[in-house]
Image (cartoon, rainbow, N blue to C red; front, side):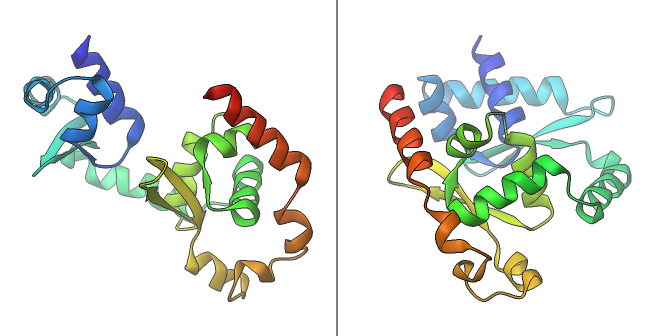
Length: 182
């Protein structure tokens, strides 16, 4: 069960995570997590596997097999250079006007899972993530390079920003949902 939990965390997160954080999420000791990571390395870190488990210091991450570097780079390049999909545009708009927002807030606004969309927007350099230590969650906002691309110096320069950034019904719905989840 613990192996499965750690494997899922590494798969879904798609970025480095500390062993301490994994231990906290799984309510286990760091030593137990280190053993699981070694088990997962033995399972995945071979020539036949498309993914590997990378550990660097106190962090771990699931990554693609280094032997598949060229094909992965081609895919990522295509993702970066390709046009935005409608769901990506919608999510980017929410992040631009309501940011910084958590993934949960974005999903409440859009009504769908946004993990893959956020990952793709970050790969394209349009959105960046920051850890919010107060709420122990990640918040997303548009990047400076995206603002430069739009030709704006501040988010407030977006069209109809004042009108669209603050929506009382949306604020109330988000607040009510927060209260229900507490």
